[in-house]
Image (cartoon, rainbow, N blue to C red):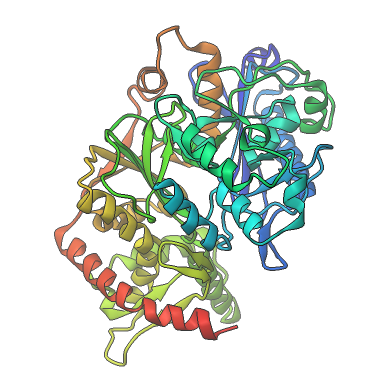
Length: 526
């Protein structure tokens, strides 16, 4: 393996998640050889969730350095060449640059719920759902608000597109990531021309058009440039990495999640549950109606996907685990955080099916689907509620999936979308079976978790980079995954339990009624 790595045959994937940047190096069998990571966290600056450019660059370098250390420890090898590279990141948001390549305003992440007016107006104009997170909603909101910087925009991209640009010099995006900027025409696999013209009419007083400031769109397998000498120096501070590695189109975490769970064929789906949670189903046909709760995005190959994206998942859960750990330490008990999570999760299974009429709202940040602009985490109960640790734990876990269920019910029940299989991945599924079982009960469908689920999107983008350089002429990405990556792969599947399905439905009915309480907290608690 030392010779394999040092001869430059390994493929690298790096993904910028909300709380962690992860790098995965894969070999000829598509399995991970080594990994590296860097922990980071967004900042709330002047009411905007953001990461600075310095944090992005230093995080990239530290993550890659951590991978280099892992390779050295495992194989005694040094990385000087790579067969291919791919970058991915949390989707959407707002990054705009002037003609000199300078960032005009701090990066506005997907987590911000500040574009409600723009999203509503664009949805009506296009007759197409435009979520608040999407880059075009941020751009139009800046226009509506009269922000002075808009006239100076020369280039707009996403976080993944920015990193790829810095390392390759190419202003491009993968189609899955691009579908979080602006609607995609499924036939052409490019930005929708009709809607582009409609937006250009709105922006006629500015010295640019969308075609001039947006990146080019590429599909899985298309070349997207090579690592430049400047890019190699930016990535590897030791200076040992040589330029020239081909780079695949940069993708979003939704697309890499689909790749990492083999969920790119029609009728397949996946749920990614971490800081945020989203559920995706690859669609056979267009939806019959426009639903603000459902994003229409694409696979990395450009096939239509229905996506329910929720801003909040495990952040409030993590805060409660930290609270309980602090209590135990004050009592003189030292315990591992991982054991605390396992205990909390397993005890949750012992709670009543409806959580004993205990409600929790995990809104650390705003939640678009339920109409909350900012977050106010809550625990609500009546004097008659069966309030004990097990019911509280279960309600806390239920709340991580509550908004997702509201959105998926629209797609699966009202729209009648067919779902053949769904795969879960992310932090919610680290404790064996528990998160998987609760998810199955929430959506009333079997849920599979693969042994490779922990590798996540960094592995997914590495697979996309490998596909670009190894695919046969007529080999589609779904066939590549099926035959070369997941053939014979192992996983566990959990089926829903009817009593618990009924209990989750009862919880959701109470949850929806209780949104008025959350609304009051948003309006009155400052």
